[in-house]
Amino acid sequence: MIRNATSILGTASILIVGLAFNGGCDRSVQFPVANRPPATPPDQLTQVSIINALMLGQYDGVIPLTSLLGYGDFGLGTCDHLDGELIVLDGAAFQVRSDGTIHRVSPEEKIPFAVVTPFQPDGKFDCPAAHSLEELDALLDKQLPGQNLFVAIRIDAQLRSIRLRSVPRQEPPYSPLADVAKTQTTWTRNDVEGTLIGIRSPPWVTSLNVPGYHWHFLSTDRRVGGHVIDCQIKTGQVSYDTCDSWLIKLSESAEFQQENLSRNLNKELEEVERSRGK
Ligand SMILES: [Zn+2]
Image (tube, rainbow, N blue to C red; front, side):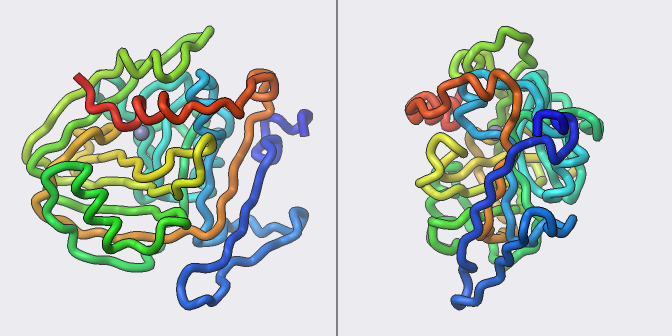
């Protein structure tokens, strides 16, 4: 495996295949590793690295963007050296830097943490008006399927306001994410139209991913984006895709191998992800 470290096959993988959600019909298919088809199963969520590695400052990219996009056309994450917020929407990847500027990500750029899926909606509904992100999450919980599968959520919306953040590029030796988050930049925009890119992870993913909702945003004109801290939605359309398979691409870097990744970082993660900013 080490010899192949630069190829997509050079990263170790964990594949968890669950039962399909709807109607008890099992849509998941398991393939022997050698025969795995090149196409990603439609309801597979693929993530790069684990959240605890990111929390502990592992910001070097693991797989190139071009490989990541082979696993999905919709999702979120961060860029090499923690250089901003990553958005994958309709197969295109955007980086929101800490100054709020938005750039296309080059295919060769290596991604240290991301979550993507081939987005094929299982259902759609009108987005209820929401006065806060907290309210939006609660309203979605009433309409989305049960909490023990991953759900990718796309909301094309008219927003009264949105509060966003991004984080500045880091250089080694890296500081933990909880420290870097204190230097995050936040900004608010009013009357924006765009897409909320959400992943709702089950509550039991602790230490591997972010339990609950994780939202990024990109405006229709591609001028406003970032990790969503808060928002007020006027109207919108929700489409969602439940994922019953979960593939994790692990890093083979020395840092990843040597770190104690089993530490309980729940409190720090809560602060980093839910921080309302100053
Ligand atoms: Zn984020």
